[in-house]
View 1: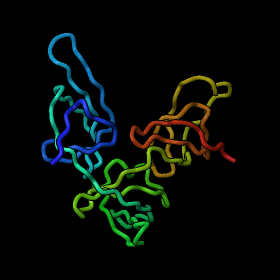
View 2 (view 1 turned 135 degrees about the horizontal axis):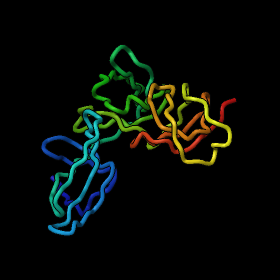
View 3 (view 1 turned 90 degrees about the horizontal axis):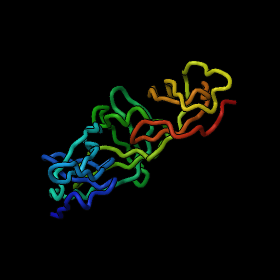
Length: 191
């Protein structure tokens, strides 16, 4: 069993916290005015996909979890299950919606993901850092608002709701950060 302490945290590594396996999404070393230094973190539960915020004392130790990643491609939804195909064996597996968690919002047919395994047990999926999705609904922007940083809600083709700049229109393809659910840029204007 390999252990690491908070000084060795990196985005993407997996650790065991209270018997659950989490991937580090974000971390920040913090030294308050009084008391010892702490490490603030955002952790994604590998099994459920939910993100929690935790603060640990500086120097606290954790078991490093070595997950095996296998390339999968999202094929389609079958009821409450999502079907993925292994890109090496072409084997299909069905994964319940609750095991995918928040990642469901960014799953589009054909997208490649990493299947996460611990000793041959399928735990969940890891999305690419960003995905390109089409805007299917948003309120019209006002002419001349293309330079401001004011945001408006938009619904994407997967059903996800995100905030986008006012110049984004229905039919535009936008790049979304799957870790935060935030707009990155417009990839393609509507045709």
